[in-house]
Each structure stands twice: as structure tokens, then as C-alpha cells.
Image (cartoon, rainbow, N blue to C red; front, top):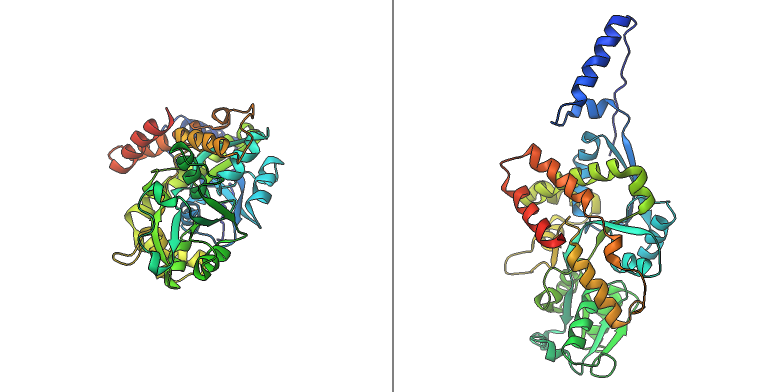
Length: 368
């Protein structure tokens, strides 16, 4: 969206210049945010990778659409990426500052020694299990997966979580079930429709699309393991060293957008529909659900959720999705302080807010 900047004109009289300088110095000691000063300074800049018109990054989109980055003194440039592998590679090489999609690529790169760092969340859960109408009640328990042919694709977290749970329940995921890797979510939908697989795992609200085409969402992966991490916000350690203030401002603006997402559905839907070009009903369905029609699976959450990310990394090792003998501990590649600083700032600005107080309780439970 259009960005505006204001130029500071210096007075020619030395006395007035000194007074202006003294005034600015006094402002710097003020604990309260001063948006005028922020706006008059040179904005900090971040380059953020975005995947098409996907609206999983709801808070980022809303923050940009409503001008919150500009108000926080931050310039955010969206860079289109073609896939998550390219995105995480760009972060690793310093060509992108933030990738707000995927936990699988971040965990994979970390397991191989890349110095990328998870510092926030985007969504949790989000994984849906689709079947044909005649199999609507197929999946009620983990045991119901036994003997099934399951369509999935690599960059989808739910099927990895279920693999880990099945292994822990004593099943052999190479013989008791069959996971069939397909190249896209649309391929999974078609494979279920044609009976080539018994069920399929989808993400990003694609269960709603499948349901509109006559298939059925029989369960969600979150029914079996709640609050598992899906998309995370990942940066590089070099970016943290060089741009930490910008990353904190980024999270402050995103938290402001989260408040809109929670409390003002109409504004949030308008912003997300404008960005994606999708109908309002589609946006409402996958973000909030439609009563009696569709139960949305995605949970918008900016919390880095260190504990669940560590759990997911261990699940990937258990499944063989990454090297079980990797010497790299993902706990060393998660920074919770950026989000914490942003959340503390929002609490300072809104001391009576139950929303931000609740987020802090969640943060303490999820990251300590």
C-alpha cells in the first residue's frame, strides 16, 4: 500500500536548532511510544517472503493493509516466492529477512546446520482429513488409520504429526499404513475423489474447497494432537544481529493486527479479501468458520511456541523426515525474546487489555 514519509526541515537559527535537538532528546527518555517521532525518522526496512495470495499470514496482511507497519516506523517489502524451499533458502542466504510460512523447511534446514532462527508464529494446526461422503465417519481414532492408503504432500505438517502418533501407538508406518506422497493439494483432492487413496491430508483451508466440491472433512489432525505448529516466522541469525529493532516493530504491528482479527471480523475479512481477491465468504470460512457449514482448522497465533516446535522437530526425527542423528538442537535456533519484547510493549500501551494479558499467559506456558 502507499507509503508516506515526512521530511524534517531544520531551522536556520542555531538557538532554535538546539532547542529542537533538546526536545528530541527529551522525547527519547519517554517510555510511551511517540508515533510522530517514529514517523519522522527514517523507517527500518524488512523484506518478507509471501506465497502468492495465501492468507495464512493473516496478521501480516492486515497490518500492511491498515498501515500499522508505517505507523511503527517500519517499511515492509513483500517479495513473492514460488515455494517454501526457495523462501527458506533466500532467508539462509540473506536475501529475505523473514519467511512467515512453513515449519517443515525451517526445521529441515536447521537439522542440516543452517543458521536460521524461528522467532514467531503464524498459524497452529490447520490440517484437515478429507474423505468421500460414504466414508464420512471413517476416522474416529488413531486405530482407524490402520490399513488405510493416505494421500499427503511433503510440506504439510498434519500428516507428519499423525505419523508420529501412530508410531508412538505401536503401528509401523511403513506397513500398517501407506502414506502416498502427491505433488499438490489439488492432486490429493482428486485422488480421494477417484478412490485412489482412502483419505487425504490438506492444509490452508483447502478442506473448505474440497467440501464445496462434494467431499467431506472427516476429522482434523488437531483432534488428535492440539496446538501443533504449522507456519512459523523464520529469520536468520545475521538478521537478528543487524535488524532486531525492526523485527520487534514487525511483531508489534502484527499484534495490533491480531487484535483487529479477534475483535473486528468485518475489517479483517475486508483486508484479507482485498489482498487475496477471494470472496468474503471464503475468507470468513477458513479464518473463522461458518456455523453449521464448515469448522475452520487454522488457528492464528503469533506465539513462537518453542515447546511445541521442539516436539515437532522430535517427531520429524522419529519419522525419518530429518536425520534422527542430527547434531543440531532446534532449541538453539528459536528466539522467543523478539515476540516477548513486542508483547510487553503492547501490554504497556494497553495495561487493561485482557487480550494481551491472555497472550502473555500463553507465552509463558508455551515457551518456558
